Image (cartoon, rainbow, N blue to C red):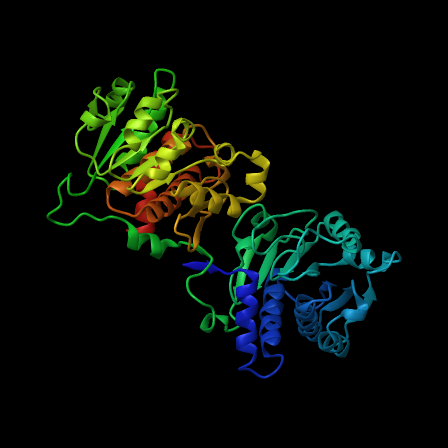
Length: 484
């Protein structure tokens, strides 16, 4: 499992570790890892031209020490100082001692810096550290523009300058990186959009922080092994009822396909049986004859261990209310989020998993969609706290937050091709089936998002896919995770 920690936690851990070590050891560890990563990205070091964009903080020191290592291996290294009077003295001396060149980039006469950038094979972004807020300062903007125009490869030190390490927000101009080399632990902004988009590939350099970082982390990202441990696997004594039965209350005369797709996701999600209630029974049975259908409403559908309600429901508020009254876990999606009585959601005793996209989340919070998209982490936390429910906020980086607090889970297994009609209906059925199989709402949402994203990626292989392709790919994703 990958974990991420906020700025204050990281700084406290660094202080604790530095108190145990000789002065400068942590920075040298970081610089060594950074120099290796730069060399690998360039393919060779000797004869390459490297430009360091150096701010006043420790990230600038990391860049200078790494630049000194590259210079000693034969690279031509130029450091552009944005705050010459506050540049890390030890790093600057090391670079000069290794034969590096130093120029000022803080004045209007910074054409030398821009020429160096145009000629560079690599730019190292050490402008702003993890404590930066609010985008690049005015004196850094010409350098950032020169980097963009030169289309030169960029390596960010710890995180791209201009992004928020704690939240993933980008409030102003930021420098895009091809590779981000981060130290000790991931920072939330490296895993959450929109900042994640600026980070490129992220490489973690171990500097020893793991021994002093607290538990739990502030953000978690499941990996194959974590998901494999959570997947429901039937035993020799299992039958379809012991494996769990999921109820699907979805679809309408206008949107029968939503019911079919939600059922498709549920059938592949680990539960032993699927019960369907709603007006799309004929379409569901025609596609999936194994499904148990009823036209008597949720209360007379038979026993279930979890419900999914809302995909394609249209204006059927009565069914949504009936499902919310059930004493089993409920996943609410799509129209169900709009139709659900909000106090009824808060009053529920059994677990609730809400799965909005950014537009639906904005409506639930009473804010503009752009506000949710720009501050996804705070939005998912606010939704979970406000509704007393586990919330899965869909998007390029899906976030899952528990109402009790703790680490937010982030998932990035998907592909842009998952932005297709009906894909979310498949995810709803899949998540509901995992709930019925006995997973907690947090685990069901996290595992469902992971499998759904992986299924989309495997089904796509770089080409467009439809929601049915994603549903059919869940089994392949499941086997991929388990290594079978």
